[in-house]
Image (tube, rainbow, N blue to C red; front, side):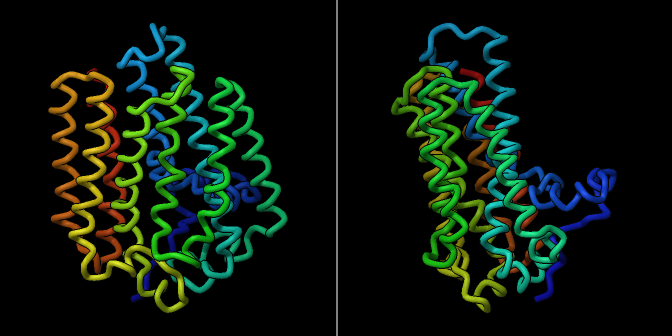
Length: 305
């Protein structure tokens, strides 16, 4: 099946960037904000849940606004760094896949040296942001780098690379809680585990876009492992996600309005599983992108307190 490239240089606001900057913006996926949203939501969930639970004492509006700004900027920068790491490792594989052949490293628009320098710059900005938080967050931020750097290799050794993506992408739930409280609590861990299950669901859907190419070149994914039996697994992943998030809300002492909105979020996940056509790449991408709404619903649920 022929699939269009996921790089559209002449579309969107990136076309206004200088020619020398644009390939690096594409390398960091600045043109595709869904990844930033999926990385950001768990961070915001952790911040808001800790504040609503009163686990860190009284939190002022300015203080919370500062944390929200830091985590938002951090998610943007570190998502770009993660994409750069991924493309450095996958540059030869990407060149063989129709959807990714136009990516800057695979196409030669950015050199390996240029990508490494750009990665170092992004990591430096990420470090500066991290240092604005408390020492526990410093330790947590450094600890997750092992997974961030090894995740791109997982598709070569296991059919469950989506699990490792979930471990990395949802770490912000723990860091958000730790930023407010200076500690890690069971509610934060439950939220984190729920986020991992959520990622297993949405990224399995995403992986179905490339299953033919992946099988041809020998790359592994949950889409290939589960195959035609994917849909029951999606029910399980999303049920576990909702259970983890609801468990976190219960441990934090949130009230019934939060659980009412979480029920709506659960309805959205059910809609995904029931309607997605796993053999249609465009449908998979649309359902994958719809998880921005799920993140917003969970955010609303936790904010209700």
